[in-house]
Every structure is written in structure tokens, then in C-alpha cells.
Length: 193
Image (tube, rainbow, N blue to C red):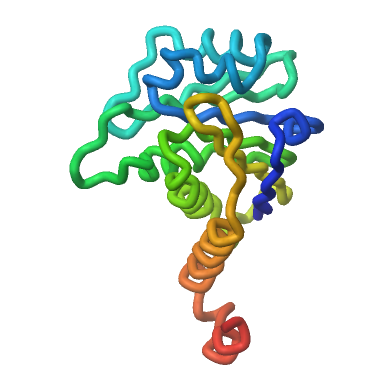
């Protein structure tokens, strides 16, 4: 079960990280957003992954393992346009991409957003992608996911306490629903509430 942390600076978050997932709309990557936020070496690795990629309706995630730091790099190319039924925050595409962002160890997830108001929806989508309950016979070692959001100008946006509480509540509710009744009796549920 991954823990979500909220560092304020990307450089500090990347120390000791084995993975980095970068998510942003296609227009942000085309405008060079990642070069402002990531620095030259990581931006060059991102550029290499984006060659001949198209986001489609729900985005596309491309991953690579290399000798660089961090070792694992994933880039989620989110759609610029969303249908009238989808949120402008692209939370469904973030949910889809976020499911691959919880390997063992420390992973940094950097999301490029159009508006500061989209931080909550982006974090909520990532939280939904990382449930607390798992019944796998060979569970992964618990990891840490460091969540950062940056606007399209490259400025890191702080995560509000409200957004953190929403993410925690979503993960808790999913755990209550996902846990089998043989393991979560009515008394256990009442105690957890």
C-alpha cells in the first residue's frame, strides 16, 4: 500500500526516487512545459518517449527504464480536448495513468495542470488509482508516491490541506468497500468509522 506524500520542490522529491511519472496535456509538452519544470537531462528523456505518440481520448502512457536517475520514467500524454462529459482537469486520464505509478520504493508523480483549481481533482484521481486494500498473494512492498502539481508556466502549486483530506477520504472509503466482509465485519466497520 503506497503512502502519498506532498513535497514542495521537485528536486527534493526526486532524491532517492526510483521512478518519475510526468503527466500533462499534449499542448503543455508541445510548448516545452517539461523543459521548464524538469531540467535538461530529464526533459531530453521525456522528449524521447513522446516521439510519435498521440493522446487519444483518454491519454497514453509510455514508460522506459534506463541507467539514468530516476531509473524508471513514465510519461502520460493527456488529451488537450475533453468531451462535455469529462472534467477539464482530465481526472479520468490521470486515473488511468496513475495505476502504473505505484511500484515498490519511491515514485514521484508530477502533474501539469491548466488551473490551480484542478489540483484537487488531479490528486483525487491519483488517490483512486492507489487503493489501500489488496488481496494479492504476493503483495508489493509498500512504497511512497510523492505528488506534485505545476501550472503550465512551470510553477509548482502547493497542495491544500483540503485536497489531502479528500485524497485520504477517497482511499479510506475504497478500503472499506474493497475489504471482504469476512475480514471487515460490521463491528470492524463501526470501529473504523
